[in-house]
Amino acid sequence: MLKSRYLVQPEDFSIQEIDNIIDIAHDIIEYPGKYAHALDGKVLATLFFEPSTRTRLSFEAAMNRLGGRVIGFSDSKSSSTSKGESLEDTMRIVSGYADIIASRHPIAGAGHRAADAALVPFINAGDGKNQHPTQTLTDLITIKHYKGRLDNLTIGLCGDLKYGRTVHSLAKAMNRYENVNFIFISPEELMMPEETKRELKPGCFEETSNLRESLAKLDVLYMTRIQEERFEDKSKYERLKDVYILDKKKLEYAREDTIVLHPLPRVNEISTDVDDDPRTVYFEQAKLGMYVRMALILEMLGVEVSSN
Ligand code: NCD
Image 1: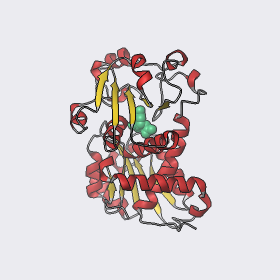
Image 2: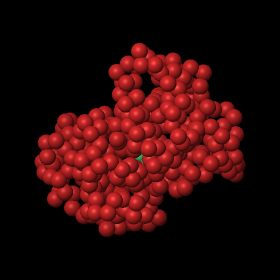
Image 3: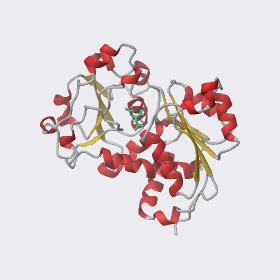
Image 4: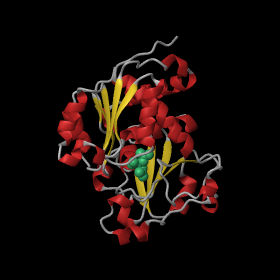
């Protein structure tokens, strides 16, 4: 049974709880039939005040595959927010309709506000540039799946480390495992924020703007999109948008055992000519995200499926 009623950031769960969720996800992959009616009669609300494809659909697919049902909206314009309703009121109301809520919001910090107001288990599906803990669960299960471990790794986080919420959550989560080192690869304008770096173990990261030179050192390369929607100055976005492009030529500098992840959607930062390289696993990563969300929903609702 999880200690926390909500998941706003990765630290809300212990690493034992996270490891357990990953184990359950693997069991679901192996024995899907066992779980097909685990959540019969339960309702998940997906409240997306900011656009999403993967996260929302993978939550919905996860709930459907557990026998549950889904209500919600995918655009704040079609909710009462457009009439001025507060986030807190929306959460209270929906708590009367659903057994669990997953919500995404454009404002950093909205995850905590929503968790405080919700009267049922709450999952932050991304709040502005802040955190994205279920993407982190997706990233962790993918790394475990392909590397067989979550410790003793060198991880390169590349791209928009300033506005990318997935890298903020992933760095904080991986920092809790033994002997994990980071190489933060970004242009100067998009470096990892001080507040995230402050929370990491001393000496566990280096910073550079050079992707090519970093490649040979990495067990995992985590590419990210430059977050256009978070730039106030669009000309700055135009200048930075193609700063990193991983293509066939560049990937030659990586080791044979390096894996390449991306939370997706990608824009230009990964060329399609590397999609069939066995080291690139972002499409498998998106699929693993559905299974890990199935495990998460089960755990947050305290539903145990017997092991036989
Ligand atoms: C990410 C997000 O929303 O932060 N997408 C996702 O959930 N898979 C990454 C991004 O939008 O760049």
